[in-house]
Image (cartoon, rainbow, N blue to C red; front, side, top):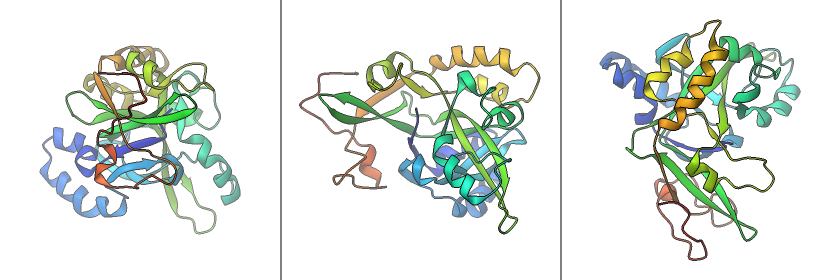
Length: 255
């Protein structure tokens, strides 16, 4: 699962920065960034924040989208509200089968860049949040699906996305131990040389997906415990939310 992220404008500019497109960087910062909810030191997908995504239609100039995919075939606001919270994540094993994701998996793929993501560790009937980031401190490129939905009330277009998840790697196997799940989960992280392959719309994506899933484990992650992300002690969307916090009752989980 991936329901909590940290992302900044710097992270969301990753592809444009890598392309050294100074004009695009300026336009994105001035025109698109004000339309988002950035910076998000901690954001829950259930709040449906607006961020930037890079789509297969334009891999270097992003667009604003809200978290929680709204399939194009949704008929009304009532149906949209019902489905919204259940499409924050899309399991990579079933994206070509589920009606909510099938069309997007074949035709509308995108990348969301984040500084890191949060996950909870279960211990003695308590949950302890971890912040997971790339060891080299570079932004993480998360595989995602997107859609464009036309609001029937005013005819306006809403772009939305779902983060693709896969089986957790070794470090996530230690952290994501929710007893209600059969296995640990984590977002599908794209190695830099795999990003273009994910965005390429072609007839062989189902076969190539196996390679993408295999290579995502090559991204080296690092994790540490942070302050609570739920309940009365939650401090909100503040910069220190991802800072290290020690819990004496926890055994050593990760380095």
